Image (cartoon, rainbow, N blue to C red; front, side, top):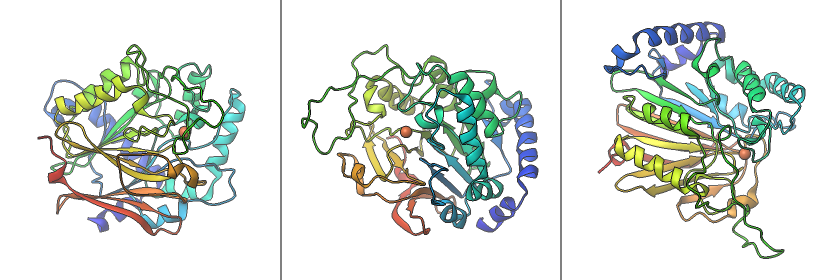
Length: 373
Ligand SMILES: [Fe+2]
């Protein structure tokens, strides 16, 4: 399978783009028949590409002097690379500045090579959205969305250009090897998170942020439209499903932005996963400048959140923060995440790689474990 994937990767990016665009058009016309259901769920369908390796990374500052994780990622030869947010450090309300910073990413040698050699998917986090820890009160969110979609070559007429927010879903492969990648937008609709006002010296050493869980159930992280869409997406038939969230979903104790601060929405997602029996689903996340693997039993299902963050800059101090759900050790140097899908032997291997391409964390999960009881 790896050999045939390399053949796919040797396509020029233009040819690949044309192929994927054609397949997308075919799917929009034929989707209900392919999936045997009447609801034409908008999940871009890439039938010709069976995924055996998906890589992802977050927190990439093109202004950093290092080439970061690109050579290591290229060495993995992934079928798909997911940019999980903080892809640049925009941090501005000036769209000329934001555009200029995206232009710098386009000129990063490693970025260019990676974009040519694999299919690239992307969502954003706060810094590339334009506002540190920003949410729905960022006044330039519409303008920022256009720059993002243009940069990542979203086709004109795509559903993503017709609705607010950049969330999207992509389905690869067929016949028992269907992998769906759901990319969430945790910024565009998110209400302001409540903060704890620590007095000097009061904040515990193993907490680095200041956010706390809200008990206001009217507060949203994803917003109504994205929730309705996500509910549909979880019903798309898939043999393996990846939910990509820029912020962590299960590691909720460090005070940094995460799903635990909007607990009713975290529980809503768990309920939906159970309701639709979304077997063989994992979460990936970024944002925190180190790597860790977390696991929570959400009522008869072991949900994993695979966090990798720090493509150009890591934060060893933040890796010392509290996470009762962490499996094994955290890794606090430059890193990226790799997901190997072994369809033949029915398991997934989650790996964190360092900047030399060495696997520094590795965890194998048989598909038989990822079943709702
Ligand atoms: Fe972030």
